[in-house]
Image 1 (cartoon, rainbow, N blue to C red):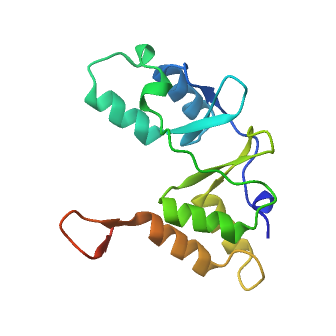
Image 2: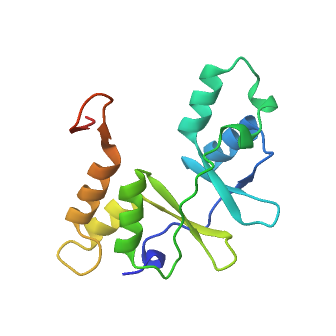
Length: 159
């Protein structure tokens, strides 16, 4: 099974200079939890989530309309391609402990989003068939939610 068979389309994006107020409106209007951030050439340069926005607004004494996405977005970027095997994309999600992965074309432009929610929905439809299994979905979710606490050698699963 390929990422193309699971990802959500179309993708809603913002730019690095979009304000947090405008990004929040986009999230609400499109009922989504993240936005890929497009660079000048249209390629994906980062991601911003509703959590990134909440934390930024809760820790700054600034108006959302005055803060550009660039200041609070995640600058480390992990992507996948539509033709990539879904299990390879799941490996990236697990290793990087992220809930959403932008799907990009050969030019680096976002054409979709792969999320844990999509994976769970596909696993439910595929129960007992080739593709994404419930075990794949559970293992991916568990890996994303598992945290290593400072001072502890073992992992703790968040409830």
